[in-house]
Length: 160
Image 1 (cartoon, helix red, strand yellow):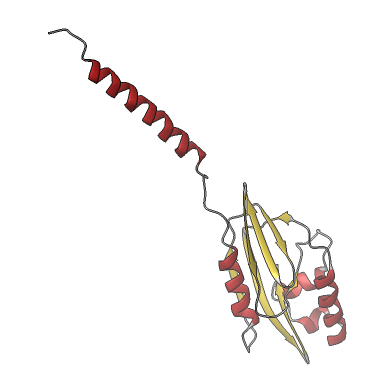
Image 2 (tube, one colour; image 1 turned 60 degrees about the vertical axis):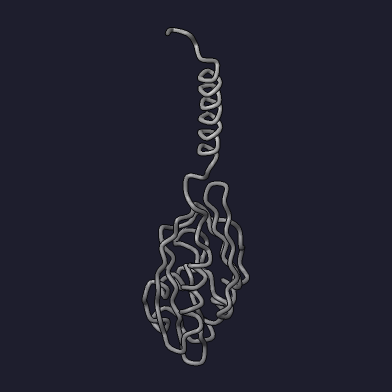
């Protein structure tokens, strides 16, 4: 009646091994999904491809961001996501105090370009300088803003 069943002991040992292995697999899974670079690229492209002046925002779930005139990269934890921009070259606008052109930041925030720049050529020159600026990793904001701007004969898609 109080005999130890040999089969039951092996069953318990097997169950313990499987439980430990399952716990190890679950602990190795990432805590969050990789950043959504494709979704951000789609938002940027939808504004850049438009015929009319437009503004859009897209929330970011990333720790770091690298934005060039043709590519966006997002990193969070150990995961990195990249996407190519198809809507033409965009103008990266750095946050205030980050060494970027504060005039472009003002235009991105909604100020008309003719209120910030002396003439369309100055606007075009500032946008060209921003596109050739440093493209290193930076801390990612909570959201990204995209604005297409037309200033007389010049058109630019500002992203910041």
